[in-house]
Figure (cartoon, helix red, strand yellow):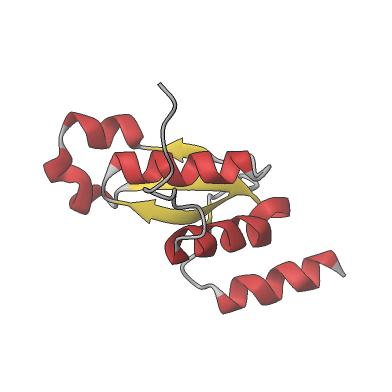
Length: 105
């Protein structure tokens, strides 16, 4: 049953691709490494074991980022749907900090 749900989710999200020979999927790509790091931090905070691929390569020469496809965020298949929800929330601004909150010094 879980495999059917995963297959349906993957069919609805064709941009998500599996790393050949691994149980890891590319859930997102970012041309700016700091944005990828922020997204990975949100995923990890939500309990999703996410890793970055190619982040160091992008930081060495940002001009190569478009040619190489950017920084990839990889997650295991068991966490794909949860990761998708977290990234949608990030795009909506659900995790944005309120700029009017006083900072204690």
